[in-house]
View (cartoon, rainbow, N blue to C red):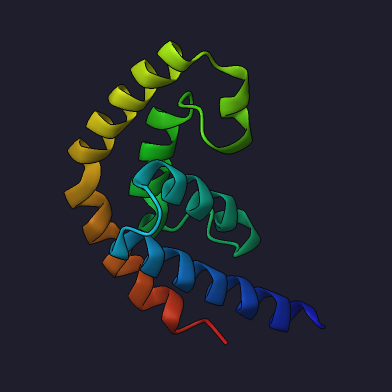
Amino acid sequence: MNHDSYVAGQWALLVQLLEDLQAGRIGITEGCRSVVALRSVLGQETSDLFVSFVAVDSETDHFPLGQSRSGWSPSALEREDKERLACEQFHAKSIGEAASKLLAHARSHAL
């Protein structure tokens, strides 16, 4: 696989991720983290289309997700999950709009 094919595949991954985010198959915090992780692979560090995702990722980076949850007590997870869900609800509209804009751009670059 050459570099161009790899990058096109990463754009396709971003398209799937944004579709999952819009459909509610993944949460806003997880979705923003994943979008931001792809940003540099795609050479989009300065793209305004990623700003909302970077902002939410920065605001929510302390919330435990995935494997890291195993090190937390049930009461701490309950507290953090409640706060995370409130934050996600607050950002739902803006991330939904940002996802739509980025999705249109990403589809033009995907395989």
